[in-house]
Length: 333
Image 1 (cartoon, rainbow, N blue to C red):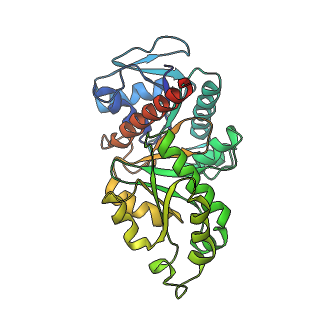
Image 2: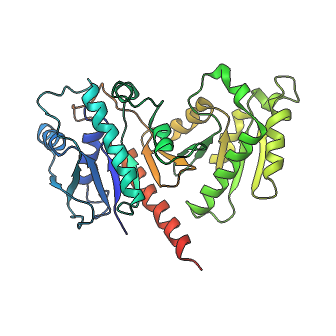
Image 3: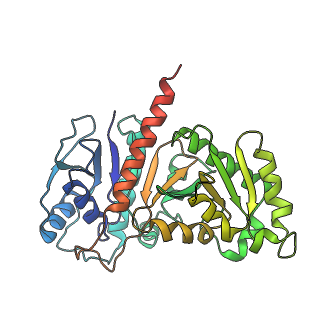
Protein backbone atom coordinates (compact mmCIF):
# COMPACT_ATOMS: atom_id res chain seq x y z
CA UNK A 1 0.00 0.00 0.00
CA UNK A 2 1.22 3.51 -0.78
CA UNK A 3 1.80 5.63 2.32
CA UNK A 4 -0.71 8.10 3.70
CA UNK A 5 0.40 11.72 3.79
CA UNK A 6 0.16 13.92 6.86
CA UNK A 7 0.11 17.61 5.98
CA UNK A 8 1.98 19.64 8.61
CA UNK A 9 -0.60 22.41 8.84
CA UNK A 10 0.40 25.85 10.09
CA UNK A 11 4.15 25.87 10.78
CA UNK A 12 3.70 28.10 13.86
CA UNK A 13 0.80 26.15 15.33
CA UNK A 14 0.82 22.82 17.15
CA UNK A 15 1.01 20.74 13.94
CA UNK A 16 4.79 20.18 14.07
CA UNK A 17 4.64 19.17 17.74
CA UNK A 18 1.78 16.68 17.47
CA UNK A 19 3.44 15.08 14.44
CA UNK A 20 6.71 14.62 16.32
CA UNK A 21 4.95 13.29 19.40
CA UNK A 22 2.97 10.86 17.24
CA UNK A 23 6.09 9.44 15.61
CA UNK A 24 7.97 9.36 18.92
CA UNK A 25 5.40 6.86 20.18
CA UNK A 26 6.09 3.47 18.50
CA UNK A 27 2.52 2.38 19.13
CA UNK A 28 1.10 5.27 17.13
CA UNK A 29 3.59 5.93 14.33
CA UNK A 30 2.08 3.45 11.90
CA UNK A 31 5.21 1.42 11.13
CA UNK A 32 6.05 3.06 7.83
CA UNK A 33 2.50 3.78 6.68
CA UNK A 34 2.70 7.57 7.06
CA UNK A 35 4.84 10.36 5.65
CA UNK A 36 4.81 14.08 6.40
CA UNK A 37 4.37 16.82 3.84
CA UNK A 38 5.92 19.88 5.40
CA UNK A 39 9.10 21.63 6.43
CA UNK A 40 12.02 19.58 7.71
CA UNK A 41 13.75 22.60 9.22
CA UNK A 42 10.70 23.53 11.28
CA UNK A 43 10.32 19.95 12.49
CA UNK A 44 14.02 19.75 13.41
CA UNK A 45 13.82 23.04 15.32
CA UNK A 46 10.68 21.89 17.12
CA UNK A 47 12.29 18.57 18.02
CA UNK A 48 15.29 20.37 19.50
CA UNK A 49 13.17 22.92 21.37
CA UNK A 50 11.00 20.26 23.00
CA UNK A 51 13.74 17.67 23.49
CA UNK A 52 11.84 14.95 21.63
CA UNK A 53 13.73 11.73 20.88
CA UNK A 54 12.83 11.10 17.25
CA UNK A 55 14.82 11.38 14.01
CA UNK A 56 13.60 13.58 11.13
CA UNK A 57 14.65 12.37 7.66
CA UNK A 58 13.95 13.38 4.07
CA UNK A 59 11.60 11.30 1.90
CA UNK A 60 10.67 11.31 -1.77
CA UNK A 61 7.57 9.78 -3.41
CA UNK A 62 8.19 6.23 -4.52
CA UNK A 63 10.99 5.60 -2.07
CA UNK A 64 10.75 3.30 0.94
CA UNK A 65 9.27 4.76 4.10
CA UNK A 66 11.71 4.33 7.00
CA UNK A 67 10.32 3.01 10.26
CA UNK A 68 11.26 4.66 13.53
CA UNK A 69 11.80 8.11 12.01
CA UNK A 70 9.74 11.05 10.72
CA UNK A 71 9.90 10.86 6.89
CA UNK A 72 9.38 14.34 5.43
CA UNK A 73 8.69 15.45 1.88
CA UNK A 74 10.26 18.91 2.07
CA UNK A 75 7.89 21.41 0.45
CA UNK A 76 9.00 24.60 2.17
CA UNK A 77 12.23 25.95 3.58
CA UNK A 78 11.16 28.46 6.17
CA UNK A 79 13.67 30.03 8.54
CA UNK A 80 12.84 28.65 12.00
CA UNK A 81 14.78 31.46 13.69
CA UNK A 82 12.53 34.05 12.07
CA UNK A 83 9.22 32.33 12.86
CA UNK A 84 7.32 33.11 16.04
CA UNK A 85 4.99 30.56 17.60
CA UNK A 86 1.35 31.59 17.26
CA UNK A 87 2.11 34.37 14.76
CA UNK A 88 1.24 33.18 11.23
CA UNK A 89 1.96 35.36 8.21
CA UNK A 90 1.68 35.21 4.44
CA UNK A 91 4.78 33.01 4.15
CA UNK A 92 3.43 30.39 6.54
CA UNK A 93 0.10 30.61 4.71
CA UNK A 94 1.78 29.85 1.39
CA UNK A 95 3.62 26.93 2.96
CA UNK A 96 0.59 25.24 4.47
CA UNK A 97 -1.35 25.70 1.21
CA UNK A 98 1.46 23.99 -0.70
CA UNK A 99 1.37 21.00 1.66
CA UNK A 100 -2.33 20.55 0.91
CA UNK A 101 -2.01 21.00 -2.84
CA UNK A 102 0.88 18.55 -3.11
CA UNK A 103 -0.93 15.92 -1.04
CA UNK A 104 -3.92 16.03 -3.39
CA UNK A 105 -1.64 15.90 -6.45
CA UNK A 106 0.23 12.86 -5.14
CA UNK A 107 -3.02 11.07 -4.30
CA UNK A 108 -4.28 11.66 -7.84
CA UNK A 109 -0.98 10.24 -9.15
CA UNK A 110 -1.32 7.15 -6.97
CA UNK A 111 1.78 8.06 -4.92
CA UNK A 112 -0.19 8.53 -1.70
CA UNK A 113 -3.16 6.47 -0.56
CA UNK A 114 -4.87 9.30 1.32
CA UNK A 115 -4.24 12.31 3.52
CA UNK A 116 -4.46 13.34 7.16
CA UNK A 117 -4.46 17.07 7.80
CA UNK A 118 -3.06 19.00 10.73
CA UNK A 119 -4.75 22.31 11.55
CA UNK A 120 -4.37 25.49 9.52
CA UNK A 121 -5.37 29.09 10.06
CA UNK A 122 -7.93 30.43 7.60
CA UNK A 123 -6.66 34.00 8.04
CA UNK A 124 -3.13 33.20 6.83
CA UNK A 125 -4.54 30.98 4.08
CA UNK A 126 -6.55 33.91 2.73
CA UNK A 127 -3.61 36.30 3.21
CA UNK A 128 -1.59 33.99 0.96
CA UNK A 129 -4.21 34.30 -1.78
CA UNK A 130 -6.22 31.11 -1.15
CA UNK A 131 -9.72 32.42 -0.56
CA UNK A 132 -11.51 29.49 1.05
CA UNK A 133 -13.47 29.35 4.31
CA UNK A 134 -11.32 26.43 5.40
CA UNK A 135 -9.54 23.17 4.68
CA UNK A 136 -12.57 21.25 3.45
CA UNK A 137 -13.66 23.86 0.93
CA UNK A 138 -10.12 24.05 -0.47
CA UNK A 139 -9.99 20.28 -0.84
CA UNK A 140 -13.39 20.27 -2.56
CA UNK A 141 -12.06 22.84 -5.04
CA UNK A 142 -8.88 20.85 -5.68
CA UNK A 143 -10.85 17.66 -6.28
CA UNK A 144 -13.60 19.44 -8.28
CA UNK A 145 -16.43 18.44 -5.98
CA UNK A 146 -19.35 20.64 -4.95
CA UNK A 147 -21.19 18.28 -2.61
CA UNK A 148 -19.28 17.36 0.53
CA UNK A 149 -20.14 16.66 4.13
CA UNK A 150 -18.36 16.88 7.46
CA UNK A 151 -18.42 13.78 9.63
CA UNK A 152 -17.09 13.98 13.16
CA UNK A 153 -16.13 10.45 14.11
CA UNK A 154 -15.17 8.86 17.40
CA UNK A 155 -15.35 5.40 18.87
CA UNK A 156 -18.59 6.25 20.74
CA UNK A 157 -20.33 8.73 18.44
CA UNK A 158 -20.40 9.72 14.77
CA UNK A 159 -22.14 12.90 13.62
CA UNK A 160 -22.62 14.24 10.09
CA UNK A 161 -23.65 17.85 9.45
CA UNK A 162 -26.19 19.02 6.87
CA UNK A 163 -24.85 22.59 7.13
CA UNK A 164 -21.35 23.41 8.33
CA UNK A 165 -19.90 26.89 8.82
CA UNK A 166 -23.05 28.94 8.43
CA UNK A 167 -24.58 31.69 10.59
CA UNK A 168 -27.32 30.19 12.72
CA UNK A 169 -29.87 32.62 11.29
CA UNK A 170 -29.27 31.20 7.78
CA UNK A 171 -29.64 27.52 8.67
CA UNK A 172 -33.45 27.19 8.25
CA UNK A 173 -33.32 28.66 4.73
CA UNK A 174 -30.47 26.33 3.77
CA UNK A 175 -32.32 23.17 4.78
CA UNK A 176 -34.02 21.60 1.78
CA UNK A 177 -35.51 18.17 1.33
CA UNK A 178 -32.87 17.36 -1.28
CA UNK A 179 -29.95 18.55 0.84
CA UNK A 180 -31.01 16.61 3.92
CA UNK A 181 -31.62 13.48 1.83
CA UNK A 182 -28.20 13.81 0.15
CA UNK A 183 -26.53 14.04 3.55
CA UNK A 184 -28.36 10.94 4.78
CA UNK A 185 -27.27 8.98 1.70
CA UNK A 186 -23.65 10.11 2.03
CA UNK A 187 -23.69 9.05 5.67
CA UNK A 188 -25.08 5.61 4.82
CA UNK A 189 -22.52 5.13 2.05
CA UNK A 190 -19.61 6.08 4.32
CA UNK A 191 -20.72 3.94 7.24
CA UNK A 192 -21.04 0.92 4.95
CA UNK A 193 -18.05 1.46 2.67
CA UNK A 194 -15.54 3.34 4.80
CA UNK A 195 -16.30 1.89 8.22
CA UNK A 196 -17.44 -1.60 7.23
CA UNK A 197 -20.86 -1.42 8.92
CA UNK A 198 -22.99 -3.75 6.76
CA UNK A 199 -26.44 -2.35 7.65
CA UNK A 200 -25.87 1.09 9.15
CA UNK A 201 -28.58 2.72 11.24
CA UNK A 202 -28.95 6.49 10.99
CA UNK A 203 -30.90 8.79 13.27
CA UNK A 204 -31.81 12.25 11.98
CA UNK A 205 -32.08 15.16 14.40
CA UNK A 206 -34.80 17.76 14.12
CA UNK A 207 -34.00 21.43 13.87
CA UNK A 208 -36.31 22.82 16.52
CA UNK A 209 -36.89 22.04 20.22
CA UNK A 210 -38.77 18.74 20.63
CA UNK A 211 -38.41 18.26 16.84
CA UNK A 212 -41.02 20.97 16.35
CA UNK A 213 -43.62 19.47 18.69
CA UNK A 214 -46.08 18.92 15.86
CA UNK A 215 -45.48 22.37 14.39
CA UNK A 216 -45.76 24.33 17.63
CA UNK A 217 -42.07 25.31 17.61
CA UNK A 218 -41.38 25.30 13.88
CA UNK A 219 -42.40 23.40 10.77
CA UNK A 220 -39.03 22.41 9.24
CA UNK A 221 -39.46 18.88 10.58
CA UNK A 222 -42.80 18.35 8.82
CA UNK A 223 -41.97 20.36 5.71
CA UNK A 224 -38.34 19.33 5.03
CA UNK A 225 -36.73 16.78 7.33
CA UNK A 226 -39.42 14.09 7.59
CA UNK A 227 -39.93 14.00 3.78
CA UNK A 228 -36.17 13.64 3.32
CA UNK A 229 -36.13 10.72 5.76
CA UNK A 230 -38.96 9.06 3.82
CA UNK A 231 -37.05 9.59 0.55
CA UNK A 232 -34.13 7.57 1.94
CA UNK A 233 -36.03 4.89 3.83
CA UNK A 234 -36.01 2.38 0.97
CA UNK A 235 -32.22 2.59 0.56
CA UNK A 236 -31.04 2.58 4.18
CA UNK A 237 -32.16 2.21 7.77
CA UNK A 238 -32.98 5.78 8.77
CA UNK A 239 -35.33 7.26 11.34
CA UNK A 240 -36.39 10.69 12.55
CA UNK A 241 -36.61 13.54 12.91
CA UNK A 242 -35.83 13.00 16.59
CA UNK A 243 -35.74 15.68 19.30
CA UNK A 244 -32.18 17.07 19.29
CA UNK A 245 -31.93 16.92 23.08
CA UNK A 246 -32.31 13.13 23.18
CA UNK A 247 -31.03 11.78 19.85
CA UNK A 248 -27.35 11.89 20.81
CA UNK A 249 -28.03 9.94 24.00
CA UNK A 250 -29.80 7.32 21.88
CA UNK A 251 -26.78 7.11 19.59
CA UNK A 252 -24.28 6.68 22.41
CA UNK A 253 -26.57 4.04 23.93
CA UNK A 254 -26.24 1.98 20.75
CA UNK A 255 -29.57 2.68 19.05
CA UNK A 256 -27.89 3.93 15.88
CA UNK A 257 -24.50 4.17 14.19
CA UNK A 258 -24.54 7.88 13.36
CA UNK A 259 -26.60 11.02 13.82
CA UNK A 260 -27.33 13.47 11.01
CA UNK A 261 -27.43 16.93 12.59
CA UNK A 262 -28.84 20.06 10.99
CA UNK A 263 -26.13 22.57 11.91
CA UNK A 264 -22.60 22.87 13.25
CA UNK A 265 -23.02 23.35 16.98
CA UNK A 266 -26.02 21.04 17.23
CA UNK A 267 -23.71 18.18 16.29
CA UNK A 268 -20.34 19.32 17.58
CA UNK A 269 -21.29 20.26 21.13
CA UNK A 270 -22.33 16.70 22.10
CA UNK A 271 -19.53 15.22 19.99
CA UNK A 272 -16.77 17.25 21.62
CA UNK A 273 -18.22 16.61 25.05
CA UNK A 274 -17.36 12.94 24.41
CA UNK A 275 -14.40 13.21 22.02
CA UNK A 276 -12.68 16.50 22.79
CA UNK A 277 -9.17 15.07 22.59
CA UNK A 278 -9.59 12.10 20.25
CA UNK A 279 -12.25 13.07 17.71
CA UNK A 280 -11.63 12.92 13.95
CA UNK A 281 -12.98 15.03 11.10
CA UNK A 282 -13.75 12.86 8.05
CA UNK A 283 -14.74 14.57 4.80
CA UNK A 284 -17.46 12.71 2.92
CA UNK A 285 -18.11 13.20 -0.79
CA UNK A 286 -14.51 13.64 -1.94
CA UNK A 287 -12.86 11.20 -4.38
CA UNK A 288 -9.91 10.94 -1.97
CA UNK A 289 -9.54 9.77 1.61
CA UNK A 290 -9.17 12.72 3.95
CA UNK A 291 -9.28 12.74 7.72
CA UNK A 292 -8.24 15.52 10.05
CA UNK A 293 -7.74 16.39 13.66
CA UNK A 294 -10.87 17.94 15.18
CA UNK A 295 -9.03 20.85 16.82
CA UNK A 296 -7.41 24.07 15.69
CA UNK A 297 -3.90 25.47 15.61
CA UNK A 298 -3.94 26.17 19.39
CA UNK A 299 -1.63 29.14 19.05
CA UNK A 300 -1.83 29.80 22.79
CA UNK A 301 0.12 26.61 23.56
CA UNK A 302 2.21 26.26 20.38
CA UNK A 303 5.88 25.66 21.13
CA UNK A 304 5.27 25.03 24.83
CA UNK A 305 5.33 21.23 24.79
CA UNK A 306 1.68 20.93 25.86
CA UNK A 307 0.00 19.68 22.68
CA UNK A 308 -1.80 16.34 22.77
CA UNK A 309 -1.39 14.11 19.66
CA UNK A 310 -4.41 11.92 20.49
CA UNK A 311 -6.67 13.36 17.78
CA UNK A 312 -3.91 13.06 15.16
CA UNK A 313 -3.31 9.47 16.19
CA UNK A 314 -7.01 8.67 15.79
CA UNK A 315 -7.12 10.52 12.46
CA UNK A 316 -4.23 8.38 11.19
CA UNK A 317 -5.84 5.17 12.45
CA UNK A 318 -9.13 6.10 10.80
CA UNK A 319 -7.51 7.08 7.51
CA UNK A 320 -5.73 3.72 7.36
CA UNK A 321 -9.02 1.93 8.10
CA UNK A 322 -10.89 3.80 5.36
CA UNK A 323 -8.10 3.27 2.82
CA UNK A 324 -8.03 -0.47 3.58
CA UNK A 325 -11.83 -0.79 3.32
CA UNK A 326 -11.95 1.08 0.02
CA UNK A 327 -9.12 -0.95 -1.47
CA UNK A 328 -10.82 -4.16 -0.38
CA UNK A 329 -13.97 -3.10 -2.19
CA UNK A 330 -11.97 -2.46 -5.35
CA UNK A 331 -10.69 -6.04 -5.49
CA UNK A 332 -13.99 -7.75 -4.68
CA UNK A 333 -15.33 -9.29 -7.92
